[in-house]
Length: 490
Ligand code: GLN
Image (cartoon, rainbow, N blue to C red; front, side, top):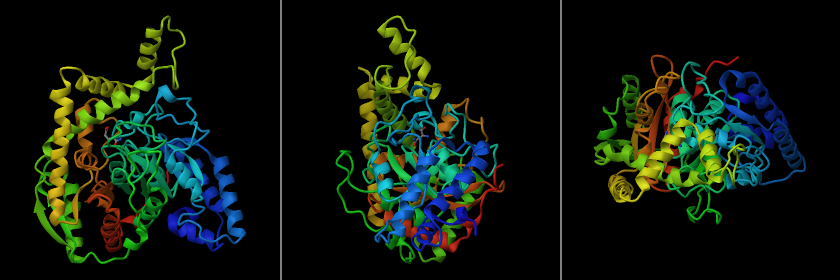
């Protein structure tokens, strides 16, 4: 049995039962990275020595007979390159942070360390998490392991590729408008965006603070549930994290979904450039859930058509403010040849940021400027409330909402680069979930005729990630999609 084929929870069990060691497991994933990363570009930095050292420490604890080890004890993990891991580079795949070393650990990193999870390295992403294809990375795009002419999705593309190609058993990404769920859909993995406030954002480089949330990538639901248990919880260092109990998410696995009520929003089906393959996968998901005893009803989320516009006002406004700190003085890159302070600021930012990031900073600055604030930013905040209310209304009668994750399977590298609006439309089904602050999960829902994975999205009530795991696990058990794997990249 190849260790890298086992799920994260199975690996943890094998480590605890002394059938293998954390060091063997970590070394096996490192070997896979060495073999495949040149062909897939999932990792932008590798921390193998520290990972192996952490694995050895885990093995000593097992050998000493320590009890109460975490659910993922000894299992290695990969991080998106926008999370601080003390003493290592955190670049956000931007020139402006190219040589920036994290001065402290993000809360999620502290939690991974406390759970005994060796960190393999950092994964590729769109610059500052702005994008849907990983093409906006200074390191160049990650490639989709199912077809290397296709994008892996974004912005957490590298984290998705690492898990899909078995270079890591699980990984973390961040999701502001779809950046965990859309790459999960493109690469055929599980990807969860938790409720806003469920996971601490301390040490996550901010893109749009009222939307950003960290979440897990995995190859099955059990692993996603276990990893959420590791990273979730209140954190006094993040004032937006919420003090509410974190349930044991494994309790929601292997439960019946009989009688559960699933809503189908009419605005999400049949519109938004939905491909035939995706709409067939959704129909099949409905048929499977019906067989499992769930009940469906059509609903309306009437403000859906305003989601994209609202998001691109709020997200860019917050980004323009968050990215003001990269001025050549405090962080990262500085143009050292500038002749005045003003020139140093402007040339540092002009040289340090890529085109998409500049586009967002300009848009965000514009919607916040005097005279436009009321017309754009304030209006968008009001529409955001209406979007949230649409969901509240549906959740009075339903347990969950089912939609496609993305309108199409992974598109070709380069296909949407010249047209930002087309790129933005990749997140048409995921963005509303961030605006409403609620949880959403993308699960493997089959393949297109071109053998590309298709994701199904389940959206839940605030803090009801458990219900999503329940539904997702029932679907995973009733299908065999997760058994498929991409060819090895040489
Ligand atoms: N693709 C969306 C954007 O470009 C969402 C990104 C994200 O979730 N980080 O803003």
